[in-house]
Length: 241
Image (cartoon, rainbow, N blue to C red; front, top):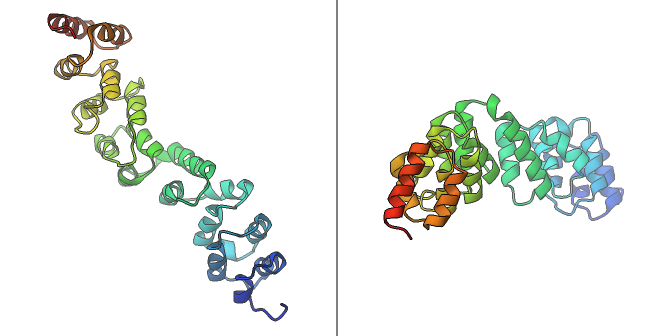
């Protein structure tokens, strides 16, 4: 056992050998990365690695340690706060990162959205997690919210939630109301009918598919102008469902 070199030690099944390896000043970043590919590492080995004076200087090692499925939260969360935007996105999308750590990565990224560049926001809108795409539906830049609507991870729940927020822009309401994927969803249509920016033409298109008693109920809580509400009711009373 004593004759094992560092490369052999990091592949050992022995906890004591692993602890000795991660405490060794000769441990390189490459060896640390190779070690972190192991999903079976004990928590105390990861804690010891986090104290290594040189291995943790490399960004890749910090990311691998924070995203390790067995990393203690008091290690992973502070490390995640040091991530760049796209590293946070990758952590939130990783299949091996624990759910609460993914959620933390999303929350940190959402808090940063107002400070990152348009180009980064566009990339995030297209590729990031459901929560990030949902948050970017409220972006002031129309190109960003349109990109978020095309994100394959975006779900109806987040579209409805964004549409109903008081801060939802006219650009968002118009984009959703004409979107091939979202405008045909009943819950999305109902949410749009509760907003103040929906055009009369789109409101009529959605209202005609809703039973009159339900439509009345929806319009009671709607922020649409009174003129549009009255027009909807008149049109739908002609052909009640």
